[in-house]
Length: 116
Image (cartoon, rainbow, N blue to C red):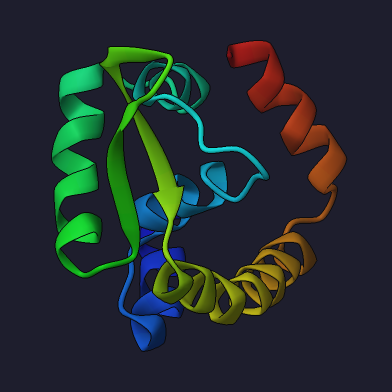
């Protein structure tokens, strides 16, 4: 599945994992690194490694939290929002194609939920 989405997102220059990370930052207030790590079920070190290429590309920014200087806030840049705006329709189309290929996607989802 990841390869299928990676291929779909190639035109916007991101991977499926990067799409998930960018989506997790698409909110009104910048989240902390810790809350994003928890949401994506990643340890902070792994998340930090995944942030670096997106930050280098200018798609997100990392800033100290004014309320707690030890914490870092993650936010999408205008460039990150633009990439995400291009990627969401690609995700929808790819997701629809995947679901169309599965005889009963609700049964598959229920099975995956049971495994989680």
